[in-house]
Amino acid sequence: MPMNPAPRIRPVAAADLAAWRPLWDGYNAFYGRHGDTALAEEVSRTTWSRFLDPAEPVHALVAEHEGRLLGLAHFLFHRSTTQLGLSCYLQDLFTAPDARGRGVGHALIEAVYRRAGEAGSPRVYWQTHETNGSAMRLYDQVAERSGFVVYRKLL
Image (cartoon, rainbow, N blue to C red):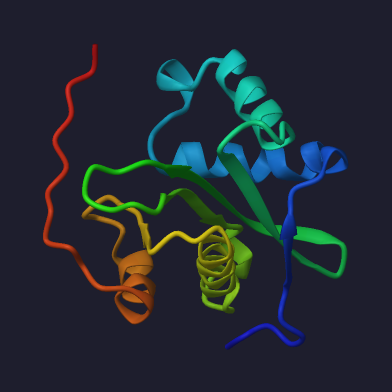
């Protein structure tokens, strides 16, 4: 059931750090980055500072409802060899567990689409883990699967 009224989607502000951090930690825990495999604190601090630096291509939106942050979306713009406009990569999307299924993720994705359009980007893309079935049900409603498989090698 959608949230009534809908959450307010806005850029993250410096004062949001304490409320953003549990969402960020929850996102990383969801993907298994906790305990011995947790991100270094320096990575989280640097990520946060990039959101507040207008020279950085990395951006953060938050979903707020009744003064509480319920979700986050982190995205960045980059060049591509197959188009002139910048591509928009939605890197992180997370909704607080008690707010899932209430339209928060959908609202965040739509806000990223608007930001990308305003920036002249012809495409927004993202990836998720193949086991993230609940998120994929939403993604199948708001985008099309590309069919590409991600390969990586950690160095």
